Image (cartoon, rainbow, N blue to C red):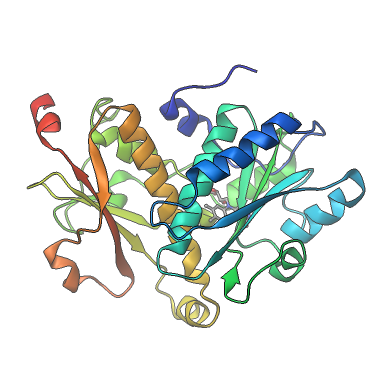
Amino acid sequence: MKRITSVLEVIRARRSVRHFSDREVERDIITKLEEWLEKYGPGYFKTGPKFRIIKASDNDREKLNGIISYGIIRGAKNFIVGRTKKNLRAFEDFGYVLQHVILECTALGIGTCWIGGTFSKSRVKQLIELEPDEHIPAIIAIGYPSENRDLKERMMRKCVHGDVRKPWRELFFADNLFVPILAETPPDPQAYDMALEMLRWGPSASNHQPWRVVKDERNGAYHFFVRRNSGIIYKILHSILQVGNIQSIDMGIAMCHFELAAKELGLPGQWQNSPPAWISDLPDNIEYVISWMTNDQRERECR
Ligand SMILES: Cc1cc2nc3c(=O)[nH]c(=O)nc-3n(C[C@H](O)[C@H](O)[C@H](O)COP(=O)(O)O)c2cc1C
């Protein structure tokens, strides 16, 4: 199979696959996945998530699919199971590392699906050894996509509106969280607009797209925020079960897409903890995560 080499193409090609074919993922590809997990860990924030690839034999395959996805994922033979401590930014790293590996899979024609909610944590815990302060934030199903996307898969995509994303005006802002950046259509292929567009097509739990990015027009920095759900039931669940952390995984995924796109476009920049001065005025459900500092000269010259 021909490997897709452009990150932008890979990001556009990726979608969640929930129905897998019988074809085995070859041993050398599994070895590559293990190497990539090694290469992209310990994550940008250096929290060091640990991963293992689990293979289901034909006998326990359907059982495992059942345990893991309550029937939503079908036919997967391999799963990446990860564990991490609940340190600050550990879930961002979890998303950041695994999304790199997911994009590598997509480039090779291998289907993937993040599974954050629809798996039994207690059953998966029996498959890997956990230290007392470790958690399994999510797992990934991997395999070759089935040729026929069946009704169940199509219904799931419809339920979460998997093929659509929020418009730019709800996600990307200039100088504060009130003034939207309006997208050029199509976005300027050589500028950070394209990196934002690539971020926008990232996967997120229930397709909530919690990322909000504010461009600082004075120094060209891009400040990344997470917008958590604010309903009362969610707040209770968040405080008891820490479910909101799944949106921190989404933020790591956003960082991965933005950074890879910027690198491929040759746009200079790096991550830095550099919150804007107005951060003290943020609403309760919005939290600062990280900033991408650009060397803005080049972008200004291009405009
Ligand atoms: C952290 C995370 C958890 C997810 N959990 C599930 C899940 O439990 N079950 C499922 O079917 N899809 C799950 N998804 C997939 C999302 O529903 C999917 O990414 C989103 O609808 C966008 O569709 P796309 O990935 O095809 O672009 C998850 C995605 C992420 C990033």
